Length: 312
Ligand SMILES: Nc1ncnc2c1ncn2[C@@H]1O[C@H](COP(=O)(O)OP(=O)(O)O)[C@@H](O)[C@H]1O
Ligand SMILES: [Mg+2]
Image 1 (cartoon, rainbow, N blue to C red):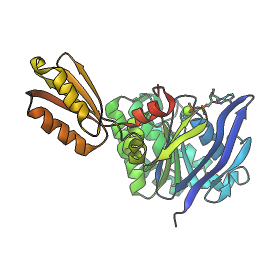
Image 2: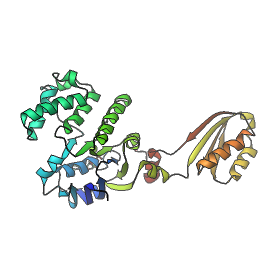
Image 3: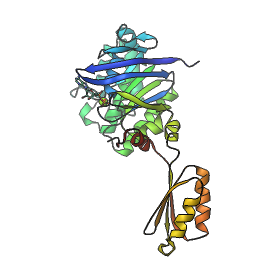
């Protein structure tokens, strides 16, 4: 049986008339990387804030390791590491001291804390910067430090609120590596993001949230399969062969959903990988193909499909 270390049941948070979180239920298993994926204002941070005990639910419950977050704030704090979206660091203190004071707040004994600060600096590859002030770090280093600080108390569960927002693609990949490490050392991770690719690459399971509601959930593959009727084949051919015959022949094939012809390009929508091969075999006998591009659905398409909008 899967042990659910985070259990959210019919959770609602209202700000006046606005339902920032609207009847959300989620169960997250031990050792999972779970993604809460949604656009700005979807209710991700509000959900995290409730889990942390910073915000009280209007109705519904949230439990961490079986403890109701509203009734056991101290008990849950010990189990959680939090990398907040706007994490606060003291700009006048060194990196090392920032970590040290954070650990003191968690009640870690000084001797133990020293070891952990060293380990955190090593883990985040920031040892060289230990005596530098926070503002000397690049964006990527700062995000690494945020995650390293969240790990300082060696919590079972990490809540990472938009851990890579604002980072350049290269640094983002680097932070992804660090998040994958967390899974390897047995942590449970709940991360929020508005980057589809990030959720796709990192998460075992994803819930897509929009206007406070969970509109879809599943593994990245399960979510993409919601759209499996749409593999697009884009082919560039010799313009002379663009004629009605080709269009008719393609349309007659079973599994072909649509055919679009424009100048020297053909776009064909098919419902299965097996049809891709048949279409290509068919075309190869009729024309010289100079370029083939096969586009499979992404989570962006899933969001578009569900909401009619792009995520950003
Ligand atoms: N303290 C608050 N008072 C009023 N409205 C809020 C408050 N916090 C968040 N909201 C609103 O709740 C919605 C969800 O916000 P948030 O959880 O921060 O979204 P996300 O983190 O997904 O971007 C937004 O419409 C936001 O404006
Ligand atoms: Mg947020």
